[in-house]
Image (tube, rainbow, N blue to C red; front, side):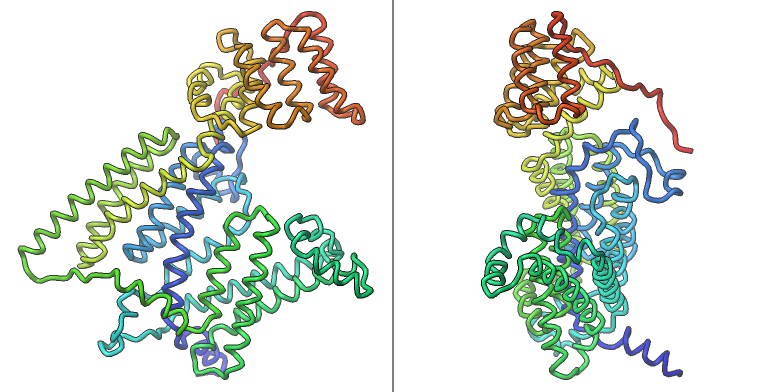
Length: 540
């Protein structure tokens, strides 16, 4: 065997603490499900089957259906349910690979996705799909005496660390850009600027220059990311009787990862839950295995072995599993009916089929514990999905925004259908949704839908939310007054909006205000004409 092959095998196939794989697999999948439902589901309002939406890859444009709100919701819901099922019920490799495809399609179906780290999460899921099986039973007290070892060989885990190293190295190199190195980017992040303000003051107090401080912070960020990249390459050696300096170095890497990603959250970067995934990975990768096992071992008390050789008990267990499964499916159907969102019913049907297939798969493999857990997973998934919809902004953003889209393209029949839902789920504190309804009622080119009273109500609420300091909001109120026939107030309001923009008289909004002022002075309301109509669109 050549020295190169020996080095390769030693790097990828030497022993790894099994607890690291367990934590990353279980926690990442649960976090992914929550991310999909509490964060990603809110992007539904971006998807319109008649709008231009290209896939990330050209071949998907040729093969996949045109992205729509219903398709997006269906895939996101299914991916979340599958992630929870794999995490808790220990579904096999085939199901894990299916999750990789489902999740990847949630961001690859179009370029409307806003977080680049979804590429990385797809690779993380692919690595997890090839993790060797590790269960809570492997960490029960006395498991070593039963022949179970907490140390295994896992090339996919080492590959995951290598991928993390590449990501950190790449982002560090990208920050060598002169604009980043100047420190201007960090200063523009309000959260970070506030957090580091005392350090900046101390630096200036000892004779430093404020601009130099931010340059140092920018350079330090690059150094931290390069150190983390090196740490992930060093990670595989910590479970191999490595020298003590390896453990100490990796603990420092853990502290740096916590500090870096915590600062990203404090800064308010719009990167979804990416920081939480990376903190989880750093914790599982850099901390000593014995510390991690202490975190996991209490969870083993929740595991109750259900294997039995008694035919009567097996029959009883099968009946209970079927009963709880039907109860869980019933809960999912109730959530689907209550959610009032497109795509939920197809997701429910496909999820039910997948649930039955998973039960059969577990039955064939003799996984009694997982069979018991799967109906519980579906029940928990139903509760979490309902919470995400109820406490989130999915419906309150989707219907008012979709109403505006339908108005722009003149689809008044569908607009009339969803108008009651737009009012039902309207968030009283959402300035954009309130303005959408005000504009719709005031300017819709359909007399049966136009309503001056409703327009004034929502336009006034919009102005209240922006404290009458937004010219566009005042323009909506002016249009609402004009629609109701009160042209004196409409002119006063549009002139009030002009005052706000008197130093920006060349802006498009100011020119619109002038056009509306001339129109209102003639005693005519503003009616928005259809901007475009689609006869339907097919992909090439």
